[in-house]
Image (cartoon, rainbow, N blue to C red):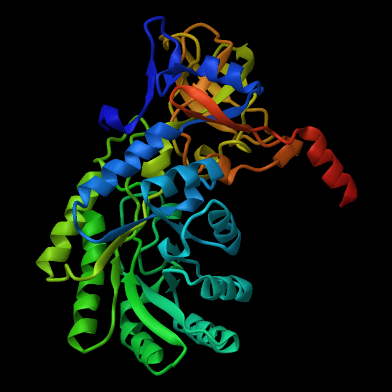
Length: 420
């Protein structure tokens, strides 16, 4: 991953920095304890701007996959750059609307949308409700009729493409719950065309996440192009093609190509199929926020035995689930000095053996550590498991803290459980 795809660095004294400012300084400005997530809004804005520039004058929509991180400060930053959002729930839609995201730059996915979510999408006039089954088309038509307002629908297809990634984040293969099989696409268009309450606006797909190169992305997008060409050839209506997201980032062992490479591949593919008249939609999430957020934790203690050295920190799998859920790796380094050679097995306080962040070369026992590249699917997947409070979030811009979302604290959890 190129240097421009992260703003984490170290200053001359070896202190960890984000966006050019020491993380210790940002935490002091925010006045919050650890564990705490810290985000660089400038880095996020630059990442989105660079991706937009990669599309040039081509009509396009970058629909940020909000499930990666739905913080209002991040949504407002991306809104100001000109992106939209890809939603997967009505709750996300309400947050996006509250953050000032225009409905005509919103798409919503999901295999089991509730009626109220469908109603909200129709009433708000979203860019598209992306449909994942024939049965869902029937439900959307019924809701649109009840509301007296046609629904803008796009078909999310399952391209039948298997990617080399963790099974939990591969979504475009035949056994996945997502999308309409290609064999059912013709029937889906027939159902749309037969209804006065459905408007056909697009075709989409999403093959999966953490793609290192555009190869599988292009393979999946090719299916979208083929369907779009056939649809237009038959006289049907379409406004856009959506190739999805999944652009990978560098977590340490892996090296991923920049999002601009995926944009260039998408542009080339659309041109080769003669589909430049259609708006091109992409749905990046991780690549826009992942490298620009970190999780800072305090070291509770070390534990040294004959076979292994353990480092116990105050952040656990309730704060960062990815290692336990996906076997994911995040680089962990001392906060106030550069890493050393002495290795420690870093674990959290949760009463689970899976609360384990792997082995890291930290040197002598540090006071605080930083877990890198946690801006995506970090806080978004956090919980209060074991009665542990959600972490604080700190947002920086121009080297200073501009907003803090403090932890609700343990007493908040205690009060809710006592009232249950």
